Image 1 (cartoon, rainbow, N blue to C red):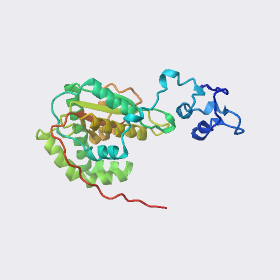
Image 2 (cartoon, rainbow, N blue to C red):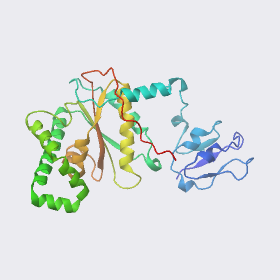
Image 3 (cartoon, helix red, strand yellow):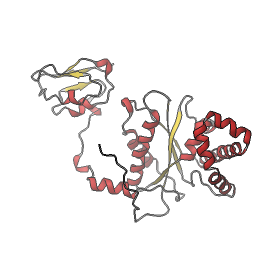
Image 4 (cartoon, helix red, strand yellow):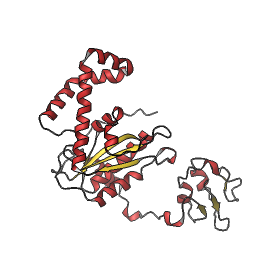
Length: 290
């Protein structure tokens, strides 16, 4: 269990740690008294209390001095710079064959692990695939899964059974069946439309249940795609691979994803073959102001 101590000699009684604690661990009985950790069993070790203390009076066993860092404010982007990065980011599907250096992949994962997670669960784990043979196997297994799905959707008996199990999903799949069949025909013709020849695949996985592991994984991906953009790398979210993994364990087994872990997201990385010099506007935000 976490242990929180507060140095009464340096504490300014500002109350920031109490106000910021999401688990209501800290209380301050009177303004002139230092806060107290009254519910340490509820602590989720998010570090808010340590990071917010202006005089380093609060100490937490989960965060020794080596883990606490001052923000380099001179390195923070302006709002305009951050927004332009988001505007410039596009899903890239044409890559150079050049492999992505490990240190760049590590920077992308570093950005991913800093994403917020529900209840500070930090549930997401990562599998990085750079071996060309395994990348091809992932693409082939994904295409094979969708080929079987298309055959099931065309078959009246299996289609009926699937509709009983997951009616909404099957209805949507049937609407997309012509597009799926054209997609599969292109793959059979030699086009690689799953990973698009990218030299690196990162899968984001976690144990199911608990504190929103799917949301945690996809928040991590959003961080990762922005870091990839900043590093001059291209990326896209591997929806086909993730969809295949929801009902087919072969990819997870191929890549030694631990048993019990579910693949909730994936992205590829590579050096873009072409550079975008323009960004395209999106639909206006649909906002309900209350």
